[in-house]
Length: 165
Length: 107
Image 1: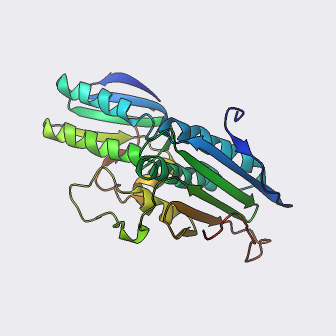
Image 2: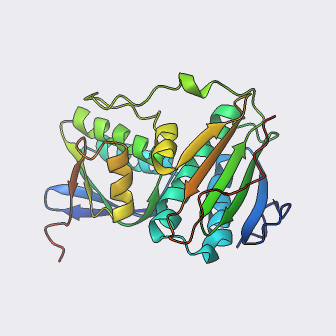
């Protein structure tokens, strides 16, 4: 269950769910945060592959980056996960309290290397799994969108969680 | 995550259960390095009961594969579920690892 997580229902969406989870920057918080998100979007009817892989893996990688690289594993800093989701679209942001960085400088993994590196795949996986990925200007927030291809889904979704500070 | 060590005729099997992520993958690395230092360098990681793996888990398996190769053996991965397979495919590591479906003594 999710009762020990700092979850706040700060947004209301008529046809879906919207919430924020704020936790200290510790890697042990990642799996419970991801489990909490899965619990909260479970009734939206997403395909199993989205529930078991696309959403949890993208969230896990984004939270790991925020905690390890953004907040440098400092438990006095926090990582904030905001989700707004309905049956057609899953949108989320992960924000850390680090200085941010220029995500365009992150190289793609070298797939030709016979001796692959043990790290450096997180952002690549996120981009592979999500429909859209963007960042805020200072680079300490990643925004991710997964569009679900239901027949009854309109093209646009007016999410409000992503400001451009 | 739980790791059960099992013996097969030509290999040690690390039967992993649960999730393999940043939070716990050091345990898997430690267990594997322990096998190598005991002289067991032909190792199979069995994923039958693994629900989820992240990039840190993948990185740990790359490390273990190098440890086993350096010792003159190798690391094989077995019984990957569809979601786990997809993570390896997305990471383009499905050719780097030897991935098998089932053990010789399993149905």
